Length: 128
Image (cartoon, rainbow, N blue to C red; front, side, top):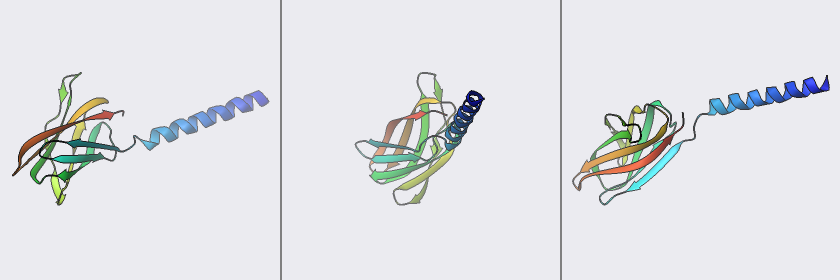
């Protein structure tokens, strides 16, 4: 009887841990890239497949436009560009489907301004 209760308690604990881990979701993702004209930090609070919100903080340079797109070279997948809206000086926000499936994506940030155009690329590991 004690063995049955011990096994039941162990199974209950394992189930609780599984449900907790499943519900917590992926950790926020912060990616930084520096180019010759611009430097950015991209923050994705919930890096998951499907629709996501991303914030681009421009730490060097003064772009007029900021767009995001992704490519998964190993699978031949790519997403269309999403234009980020300027929320305050140096801070841009974008929302859309950047990661259609889990895997390692190349996130491209295209910046265009008086200094010219530049594309900064960072790797974004997406697990869910």
